[in-house]
Image 1 (cartoon, rainbow, N blue to C red):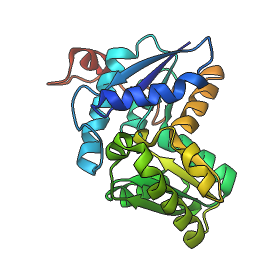
Image 2: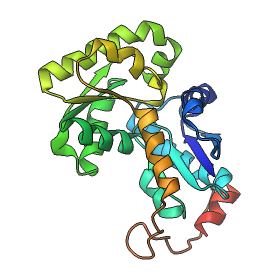
Image 3: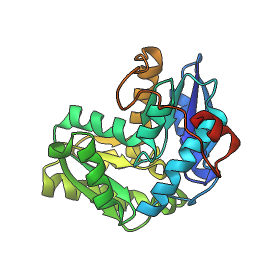
Amino acid sequence: MRILVLNPNTSPEMTALVLRVLAPLTPADVELRPATGRFGARYISSRSAGAIAGHAALDAYAEHGSDCDAVYLACFGDPGLMALKELASVPVVGMAEAACRQAADRGGRFSIVTGGERWGPILTEFVTSLGLGTSLAAVETVAPTGGDIASDPEGSTALLAQACRRTAERDGAGAVVLGGAGLAGLAERVQPHVNVPVICSTKAGFAAVLAAVRNPSPKPSAGDLARPAPVASTGLSDRLARVLG
């Protein structure tokens, strides 16, 4: 089985980090096919960068996803998630969606800790769109972006642990999602310093995509996630234009 690991950030180092974390978790009969955004921000940390990343995610799917059995959108915030679900005939799992659902199942009320100060309102809106708004205790952001944290994981552990403890104690979170591809693999370092479960968003999303590829749901034939009618386009990559047309 082939899983497209799609990182719409334009940082190949971020893609490589995600693959390193997923490698020990990958079954022998599963092949991971990485794809990095062809255009856009090196690391997504704003609404504008996220909007561009949604296009980059569709572009990468059109280029690399034709013979894949599932798509893992390995970027917290899940840019382009619903559009990918609409276009793809195979399961599509978003990192943030999967991690938030796992946290709600494990802890009831949960918080998200992530890097980049603009993420607070963005992720609050996202969690509400999942129908989990009443389960969200807080979004706790730290000043370094996910890209900065990925560059200095050792130096970031104490800062992330402090943020996790703060939201657990202040907001009553029963679990904390450590959100972001740049934070992949850090939950294990942070967990000993926090009294509630700390969930690695990268691993949570991968567990969900493995489950989906083993037991895929049929592609809807009607409704908002059914394949859209063909449409002409201008200025897109040839492959994406063909997918839309």
